[in-house]
Length: 219
Image (spheres, rainbow, N blue to C red):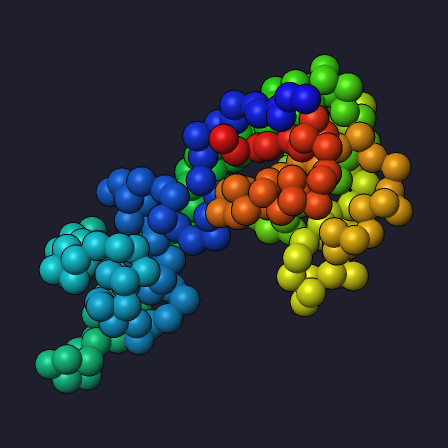
């Protein structure tokens, strides 16, 4: 029996800002946003949040101050308080709109790839499936299916080995343990994990779960 594998988009799903390329506009938005949220933030904290050198942060702050976006009040040689000007607040709002638009375009591109992937599953005869892995991948898959409900595919539940997640819900789907899969009339299990997809597949094979019902999101 064949183990189905499908090619998907080369996208890493992360919870922080490390996915996005730190362009000048992105760094400007992040620095102004950080300052607006915390007037007492240090240059080192800004550098760590964005992933750039402290010296670069100082250079950027000099530029923003000359442009009238921020003002600095020196409490001591090492302690600085930042103030956003009206011009700086308007600039941050504009950058925020551009950032959201760019992020939305990334989402649309990823969504199209996920829908193509799910179409392949449906063509193979999978209509009622379980997800394995109650993490970010499963959450994105479920959100896309919620947004695009025309696909004849139903996610019945989400399997996870973490007992602290079991009996809770992710995007309205119940998180179950592996022993409960017999309670669901399903066509297959989609491994929705990047970090653990190999160990999950091996675990399913070790319990004699049919290989032709294992669907892998990542190769």
